[in-house]
Image 1 (tube, helix red, strand yellow):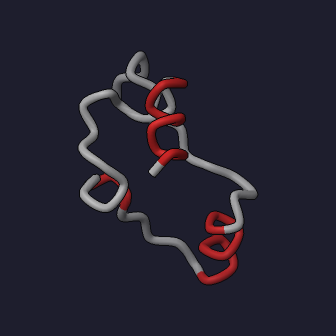
Image 2 (cartoon, helix red, strand yellow; image 1 turned 45 degrees about the horizontal axis):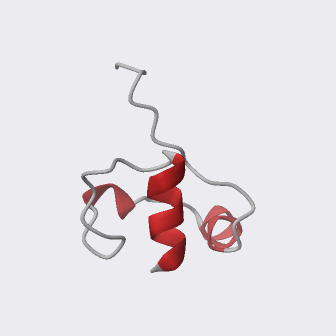
Image 3 (tube, helix red, strand yellow; image 1 turned 90 degrees about the horizontal axis):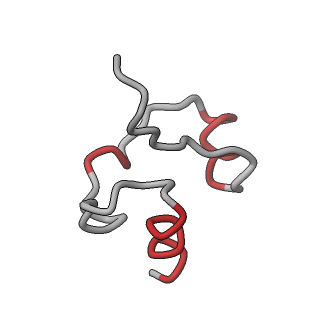
Length: 53
């Protein structure tokens, strides 16, 4: 996937992530409305390695 590689290059996902179809963090529970908005790229969730929980 070209978009996946572009997101890795931009630092949006970890360089060690294997691929969009195998990435465990790709699983997210959303209500129907927010799932549609997420799939429509109205927003995204960014990986931030400097944030520690």
